[in-house]
Length: 300
Image 1: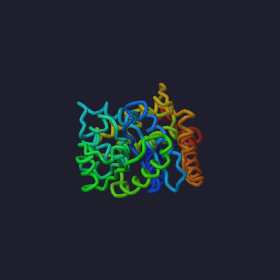
Image 2: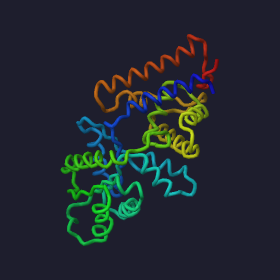
Image 3: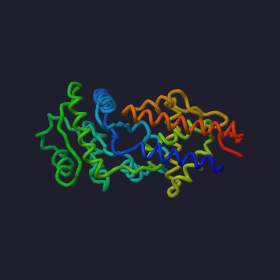
Image 4: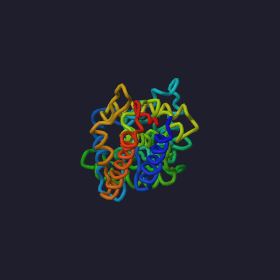
């Protein structure tokens, strides 16, 4: 693999992924929504969090997106490994408590060494005084023994702005105590690096992406590959990437995602300038300096 591709990838990783991702951004994993009513509330809450006018940025993620893809990459559905990955990937895990599935998630997460301190549990206010197993068991445990937050709220559309404010406040509080890992084994964090890398070196084959990732983030190569495969699958499915004979290429959807993220004007402008500069350097290397790319790999 040519040193130019690695050098450029390290710059993208260092500037775009480390410096631009500061303490002003918080990632939130939204659980719940198994029935239509709960799904509608979760969708409204996610939109409210994403569009919140604040000095901070909030990014909601859903189990049916990235983490479903990651689970397919784990042999024998290793739930412990998936729970560990989830705990290392986000600032908070929000559970809209109201179905057997969310009861099971609450029980498992409340006893997990890392997740137990980064939960934000939303319980329907009408059950606040119930002497149920949930209230006297997991909920009481979280409130007494952990840093997680429990909120009894009104489960209706009109309460979404108030619920969102509570989630944002709680996420900042629990997330700063247990921040997510910032490396390429974190699917929440890695997707934007891979999208930026492919945008800059478009087109680029899978083998080159994998080798670049391994050179930047050596260590757990199996986990790295699982997250890489899941990330690329999600980005292709949502229309940000396309597979071509020469490798992966970005689409207009990817360009909008990369340069039109929620944030301050200076943040967006810095991001746009960085991406443009890297892409121009790649083009100069390919054409003006007569160092061509074969299927996206730079060759002398």
